[in-house]
Image (cartoon, rainbow, N blue to C red; front, side):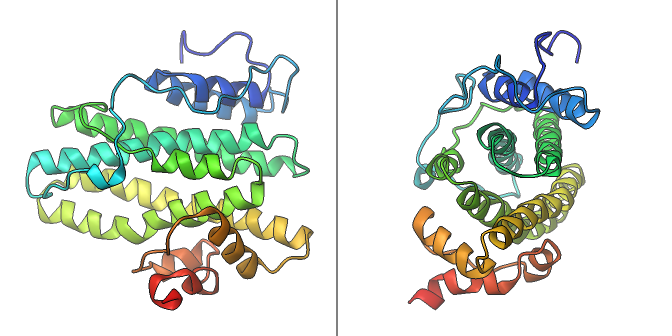
Length: 277
């Protein structure tokens, strides 16, 4: 990552914050991966008095324009434009996921958790940066780029709502938002193959397999915090979701992939639209 890594990078928290703050998406991805590599090599401290302040919002380029989710246009995957629109939406999700993983590390660096907590989330940040780059590269092969279409801001709003509570953050981000990817991605993979876009399908395959691990990291540490506080994990999850997430959870659920990641139906079935009605 020649020329991208700041020479003053001395702590994991400082590197995570530098990546979050960067408005340049390639630099953000590169910084996230470089910081992860340095942390895994144990050449960074966890925190430093010289860490920059953590921003309320991550750095972003001038484009894409951010619009409400309800205004997002739906397009058929049977056209190149439709596939570009889907890839753009996924790229935006992955970029947010980089910042969300880094934010968990930076925001909660004073929590009493083992270093393996930070190992897990930096692995997530590294892989989300990889996903963003893969999707962007595929878009460029199709003659488009990230920023060409509008995007929505719902993911970061969910993170902001849980900024003061690590257990709530884990409930909402990995165990709702990331788990949703396990539900919807298999159908998208199949549709991409149907249209003959095997290259895009292959990118989705990588994302899907990695995301199982990301949900597993969230479930592991959610259960760890619940056990430490002697709280029932499923009941605690439901309470936190009702407090911090608007609306019911949407079926269908990929119960098998969720269970493999440690997220069993006892967590989320009580929060669906039908069970609430």
